Length: 296
Image (cartoon, rainbow, N blue to C red):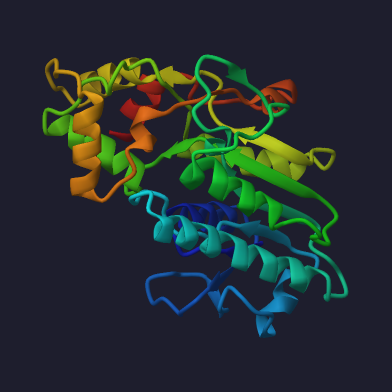
């Protein structure tokens, strides 16, 4: 398995899971890392080089991209887009030149492609939204960049918030709750689509085994949670008392101080994993509070 962008937290988790299952892992990285215990091949994420032969007859997992948790400026939107599109295009070009194309291409994507979707239950058939630019806009460009990939099978992994200690999303939720800022955000009615890291890794293995599965797949727990319920669960798990709600203006001010994107907290989408459920994928964590408790 070749992991492009595999030096990040999710890539490291995936590499460990794959190695423990007996598979060989190659991480495409922009620089050698002494703390990464897997074979590494350096690439620039833009041009074809000696790394290209690594993807022959391999499972390619494209995770490359800068973290989205940053202010939604024009410069940041361009950075987020470029950091996803350029590596994807380089992989596509390499796939068109190798003798044996990748047997499976797992293209990371995000459920943020649906923007702020309100109450509608969203399955894989739902069309992407037009905005906001830092969410749906970046995601649409990311997915479009994989067009032309020479692979036996392509799967777009539209993924919810992966709950895993050490990742920005989980650590921020835990820190805010422990600081007494665990009240609902704005109305609290916005939906959060999430998945426990163990279910995420198991879903990747499940998808790899099901050779008839291609196209868009929602990698998210079957029971999305409203923000107000999410914050209640976090307070219970981390043993914190009731906290006052955070009004939208405070979210914008806090996001400015933390150099974050307020839309991450103020928008939501109610996505479900229809295709995984239809194939009988056995979710271990369907309940948000149970998932958080296992990770606390």
